[in-house]
Amino acid sequence: MAELEALRSYQKQPTMAEVTEELKRIIDIGFPIAAMSLVSYARNMVLVVCMGRLGSLELAGGALAVGFTNISGYSVLSGLATGMESLCSQAVGSRNLSMAALTLQRTIVMLLLASVPIGLIWFNLEPLMLSINQDPDISKVASLYCRFAIPDLIANSLLHPLRIYLRSKGTTWPLMWSALVSTLFHLPITVLLSFTLGLGVPGIAISTFITNFNTLFFLLCYMFYTRTSHLVPEESMRTSLLPSPTLPHPPSSTALIGKEWGDLLRLAIPSCIAVCLEWWWYEFMTILAGYLSEPRVALATSAIVIQTTSLMYTLPTALSASASTRVGNELGAGRPSRARLAAVVAIGLALLTSFLGLIGTVFGREAWGRVFTKDYEVLELTMIVLPILGLCELANCPQTTSCGILRGSARPGTGATINFYSFYLVGAPLAIVLGFVCGLGFVGMCYGLLGAQIACVISILTVVFRTDWERESLKAKELVGKTEHFAHADQVIKCEEGVGFLTELGSGK
Image (tube, rainbow, N blue to C red):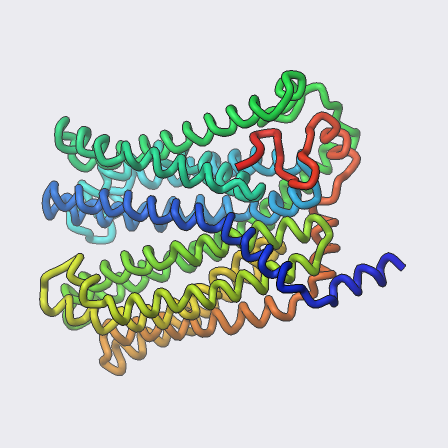
């Protein structure tokens, strides 16, 4: 009888009130994330401008270093951290509070361990660049930047999991404010270190990780304040980031811990692959642009394209995070119909907002191009490719949002598979054929990106709309359902009824 009622609830069409409520929830989670992404974009622009002020050599070396750190470090840490989204969002929905906290801890440990080999590569960048015949002077500058940026690996290893943890609770406004306040200090810190103290490129690297540690500090202050202000003293003493040492572990805890680590790695590795495949595509385009008949124009336009796509990516990123949180929360709570509604509303909102990118790139292409260059050839090529990027955005926004839905339903491996064949088995060959064989140059490469995005969005939307949400809800119950160990641990962690936000690290927005 209970199964029949659940099926009826699952098949019932949502009312307009339910759709409106879901839309408000998605926007409430996503708006601060989009604002935070814009703040981060502005910070990166400050970094590029300051490098340019130091000189052409510093700009070239810094650009090489930024590209290398993105490929070898930041994309890996971001991708690995994304694996905890499924576990945390579903655990919050199911009220399995201990699992959410333990997932946070384990992800931090995992990222710190991953940072060790990455840091060693960054420290030895110069001989690596020289071995592949890069310019010695540019390689020296890039290596200097990477060495001083190594502490930023630690900051990101803490920031990424904390942001995802808070986002899983629906607590995103503090993320925006902490990023905004720390960015306000970023420009004066960068100017002080790079120009006033004369540290140059190392000063820019140091200012970057100082800003990230400032963001981390503000987040921790928020969590400490909300924990102590929302909990009574006895509860404050008993709730912390670390599990209570007084809680006895059942005899099977070793096997249980091994299973939990296995679940985390099973989700983290495909998530990392999916993120890296998409990040690396743009570096692949930059490398190919250097082999075209007019590499100077193509590479300059490629730099503008990357900056443009980074800006346009803020909205899809926010919607993807919102969709992941909402779908995961509802599946964890055993409400498959609400999870399906969250997915449909998120995709609908993505389709609507994707037209903003198209309109902006079509009607603002000349003004936007002049922000970066006055070179006629570069500007002319930029004005040709920007509308193509706008068409890419029509596919990219729903595709990225759908990736969030797959993460929320603990299926990052599916997203990684689709990304691989779309970008590297469809997009890459198409870019090479159109760009080099057909002689379309950089424009042909952009059409290759468009082909990859179209293949990706068709595939991923097919997967999402064929989802058996009832089955995904049962899978979530198996993944984050309370064991005897977790049920015992949760006796000392209070949860706000009707809201479902954790109070162990802070509650409310």
